[in-house]
Image 1 (tube, helix red, strand yellow):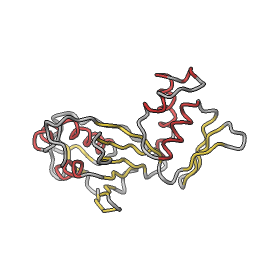
Image 2: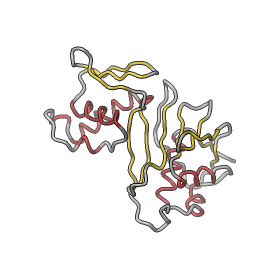
Image 3: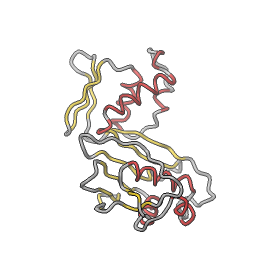
Image 4: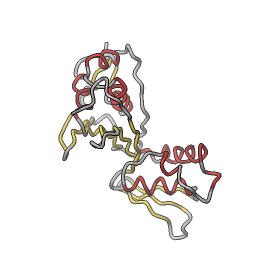
Length: 210
């Protein structure tokens, strides 16, 4: 059963690399090299925390806090400095990074934002509570494996919907509505409803409606 409005809720924001991206060191062992269909990226002399995060992201979605909590030899890159270093690198390779929203209920991810273009850049976008928005014209919904995939030729991201909670929000956006109205009608905790909307808006799937 999906979480109800009053159910305890813990959201996780996860990061991973596209499945077609391979991570390895160059011949001198000084630069980390990421190879994929969209080209090759080099990260020169990365701190241990950056290398560890990218190697874990190659295997699947992670919470960025996890590699930062591990003991390491370059203590200068620990804590807040390490987090900043990792985020800086991830911004530079944003076209390779998948952002995933998940719930701590062992039922799998809610949705994933997948880059589909070489210049793709993603950031969560909070829609003002009373702003009317709707799904962008030209967005199509297809089925790929166990996910519904939202995409549009004008956009450089796809949104993969893994669970019905996210699909409820997408369906409500077929007509102009506000975040406040979505929270009111969706049978979901408000935080989850708004987080789904944040990801859709950040991927460009929504537009302002009159």
